[in-house]
Image 1 (tube, rainbow, N blue to C red):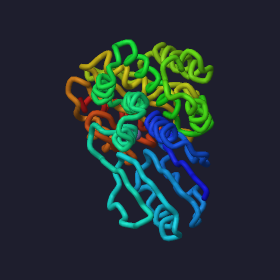
Image 2: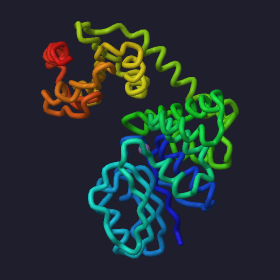
Image 3: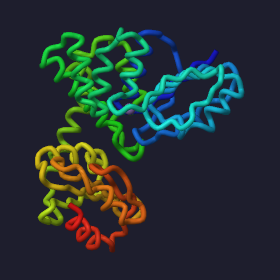
Image 4: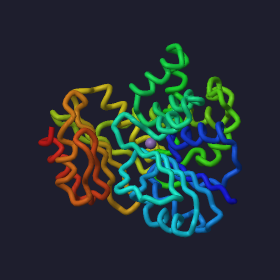
Length: 317
Ligand SMILES: [Mn+2]
């Protein structure tokens, strides 16, 4: 039997797999990538003697290769919290899918395992920005404030790593991170003893410092528009920096632009935290825009359309 572990390379995917492999050690082939690389199942060989564990990637996005595997006689166990569409009914598939708001894959695995490696579910939930459930799980373990804070930092650093567009911008490949975490049932102290994690922590801090020195490109009564240089650190920092800006100035909207590698801008917009609305409506005025009321984006804004965007931003909030 060939075992394959397919997992999202972010904190939630890593911490879901960590719990499973601590509970059931198994030498599996790893299939993973950056956070937005979610079509992963097509990389698994379609054979009857393959046993696949899938973590934290949408079933809907992986439906065709999943059906091919099941039809071929493979065994698949699937844990996820993203949109799934109709879940196939097949004797080869065991699914643990829950798309409720305050759930992530690490929490689903924690439920499945009866909490035996819950400390890693706390790390995964913090990484997926689910602070309330993460703190509840930490409290159920009797962790104090400093321990909880250490798990939050670990989760955020693991997540920071995966938040890039392409593998070339990763600080550490998620498969390498998995191998590094794997021997450790206890995450405390890892941040200080594992060189790769120290690199992640330092990189994140340096990137945030570089971003903090960038002056706004435009300032409107509604908020600020920033343009980041075309550098790897810009691509890593966008999401984390947007969150920090939003928290630091809750009455202001923020837009962060950077080149998208195709001669145009990619745009992230955050509505003012104090009134989480308007970001999606703004972005949908442009052909490749979309998202949620509080956080939205445009994948491809022609550089000539920058003044148009700034004007629309000023009116949107
Ligand atoms: Mn997740």
